[in-house]
Image 1 (cartoon, rainbow, N blue to C red):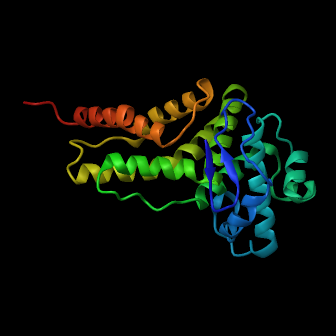
Image 2 (cartoon, rainbow, N blue to C red; image 1 turned 45 degrees about the vertical axis):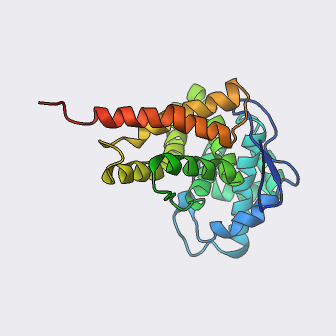
Image 3 (tube, rainbow, N blue to C red; image 1 turned 120 degrees about the vertical axis):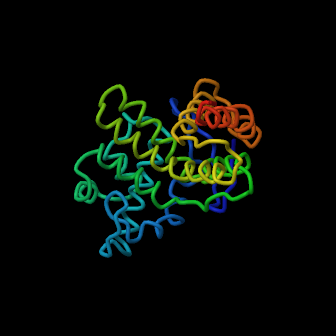
Amino acid sequence: MVIEKALGTSWRVPNVYGTVSFMKGKPHTAVSAVSSRFAGIGKLGCPVSAVVGRSASREAAICLAVVELLSETSYESVTMDAVAARAKASKATIYRRWSNKEDLVVDALSRIFNVRAEPMPATGNLRDDLIARINQQIQDPVLFAANTAAMKSLVHAAAHDGKLADVIRTSLADAQLHCWQTLLDRAHRSGELAGPVDAALVWEVAQGQFCARTSVESGLVDAGYVRHVVDDVLMPVVTHASARALPAPG
């Protein structure tokens, strides 16, 4: 699926496990669009007033380079040399901020997830809220690239480094679960859901659907597929989980 964005670049949904090129056109078109969002963001998203101007732009370029490379290739293929070349930065600059590739990948993903907050959907019903939320994820090219990069990193880390896998998994999940839980809790309070539902369940099911779609099936993730996942998979799961959360009768 090609998504036309205001960034002036076409974006294609990648194969999570393959090497399908994610970004089309100039590799750095996204950097200027998001670098200002990194201003004042320190390690792992902590605000620091010292990170301003050129320093913030440089760190943004490095973080975007990591995500781009992960999306385009594989975790193993991403090296400090490749990041430096893509970001037009020196290796010395990178190593002054991050001691190794693992720290750099985790920090880059965390920063992007932290600054790419989208408005909370408020359509009036849970079904449309879920569709709107997923569309936010797949139509933001930088955020979609970060999700893809995180999945590729997780696939590698799960087989080679359990501790790194836990960190990446937590970073990826934390970026999703708060919003999903807010939508589910709101639906419960309004009476749309009979009982409370844990967002982790919805995230688990959605993650499986989209991973299978983009990797095993190499299929498109478009508006029709999003509606299918919500209507035929997520809403039945949510409704069932909500009913099970109720106390047993008498």
